[in-house]
Image (cartoon, rainbow, N blue to C red):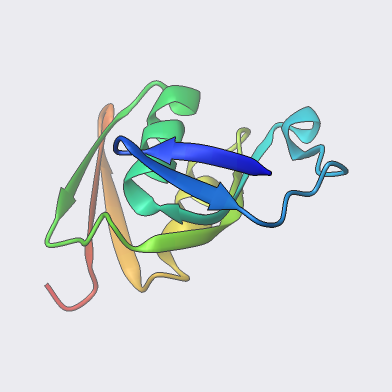
Length: 99
């Protein structure tokens, strides 16, 4: 059995694809991971700061992003969750469409 720790809670993972080699392709992939964790990973890969405005960072995200292009990476995360973003220098602000 596999597990991960998120916010000091143990979460079991019933499916884990050992053939997933996305990290070799300079990509990160996630299955039902809180948005907060995904955004932290994005910050690390692009050396940026991310701020959220009226965004539930506990939403579960399944998908992935490239490590090669910040705009494509941000779109890969924000579009499925109906969020938007703007980049100001080294800070990215993520917000709801309607806000």
